[in-house]
Amino acid sequence: MSHAQGGSLRSNITRRLVRRILAWGLGLALMCSVAGGAQAQSADSSTAPAPAPEPPSSLEFHDVANDAGRAIDLSWKLSPDDTAGSLRVSGYVLERTENLAGPWTLVDTVAAGTSTKNDQSVTRDRSYFYRVGATGPGGFTPAGAAAGPAIARSSWFNNTRWSVLAFIVSFFLFVLYFISVAQAGRKPFVRRLAGIDAIEEAIGRATEMGRPVLYVPGVQDIDEIQTVASLVILESVAKLTAKYETPIRVPVAYPIPFTIAQEMVKSGYLNAGRPEQYDPDSVRFVSPEQFAYVAAITGIMLRDRPAAHIFMGSFYGESLMLAETGFSTGAIQIAGTANVHQLPFFVVACDYTLIGEELYAASAYLSGEPKLVGSLKGADLLKITIIVVVIVGSVLETMGIHGLTTWMQTQ
Amino acid sequence: MKRELPLFLTAVIGLFMILSFFVPHQFVSVPADFLQQCAVIVVAFGYVLGGANVLRVNFDGIYKRQPDWPYKIVLAGSLLITLFFGLKEGRAWQDSNSVSMWIYNQLYSPMSATMFSLLAFFIASAAFRAFRIRTMEAGLLAAAALIVMLGRVPIGDVMTQWLPEPLRLGAVQDWIMNFPQNAAKRAVLIGAAMGVMATGLRVILGIERSYLGGGE
Image (tube, rainbow over all chains, first blue to last red; front, side, top):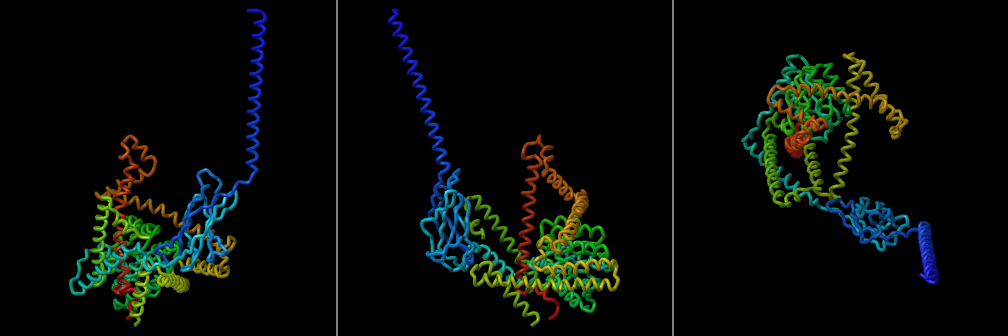
């Protein structure tokens, strides 16, 4: 290699090195400028106000069916900006007016992602126009157009309750048929109810011991049908206590059952032909407060030591407290309730227990009146009908046919 | 007339309330709501009768020095004091610094909680009797109860971890609760519902009329 060739080679290498350094420098400078620009752009975007969200669309309204004209269902399409992870929509504002010229009144605000609302603040047979707008950090965007007029109208029949009507009409017909059969002289058979048969035995025992009978008609008011059933039984019990000349104590939790219980006991003494023996203090109003009632009754159990305790009606947590305290006094105890969760407690602590429907059957059983016994047979026939419907419904559902289930659903 | 008028009113109002279950129109729903509000007002008047009965029975007991009569003084005194402050404070009785609220929080609530807590002891004594195995049925009951109680706590599954999943105590107790227990419970409920309908119908149609009292 000559000196000239060697010098040329060195100068080439030097030029390439210089060009490469320049290229790196330029690239670095460009990258810095791009990054800086991006930062600047980012800084610009954080300070600029976010745009208001796009409005929701397709607002629709429907009068709620099967009601008394008390509500309107509203639905709309979400704003295009109301997407998962997006923070541009924070909620929707629903407004309504009776006149398109305004003024608009706020119905409600709902959260982002909600596209339905049930307006229950409407007045029946009045026209309303609705609009829905989207709101977010960027501001509020009202909907372009109002929807209406929406009118809430009353329905003449709740179409989801045809099945209930069919069962009630069937029940009425069954009962009326069996009552007519019973009145014609064919008294239907009713199986023995050990708990009811034991009532006379218990009262007889109390008579022998010279102690009173305690009758507890439950802890519910007269709107509970178990209380009605219990008060009907009370008359028969009072008749027996009058017959045996044994005092009866009836502590009552609510004022209306209290007045009825007074009438029932008086009626029992009257029907037994001993109205003069009726003691007005035998029926006492205590308190609707559950545990105050328990305290009063357990007090009677421990002070007066009744020889027979009869619990008939609706009971809750106090059932075991009453029955166990009664058990500790050694009294004969008879209970009856339709509250399923309390039945085990009575079964454990009482000598006899009327389970569920037996409580309702007791009055018919005690009186033996053909009309009342006929109503029991009507209820039995409806029970058979329900069992058949349950079996048929199960088979149809298994086969994928849902018509019967749909018909039975109520609102 | 003393019996016919109440029977007529019961039948008309009872059938009207049944009708209101099926007809939501305002011609039916508005009077039905009104009738229910009337019932609330009637009940409010009933409390006057009830309160008078409480005072009469207890004052009579105090006067005659019946056994434990001093407790009757406490009862009648508590009733009158609570009533006095309730009437005096009116709607402000719910204020946190009212005397009525103090009576409720400091006297009524603790006493009520005390009574309720006794239930635990009653359950223990009742369970002791219930699970004495004297018959086949009592044995089945005790076995089912043992499985359900153990299956509902973690130790039940720990004890039977070596068994296949469907045979572990948790799964067996689920089966007992969902099938035999639920079936029996629903049978009682359906029967009771029929009883409710039958009793209601008897009252509405006037077949059951003993609740009207003995006077003809």
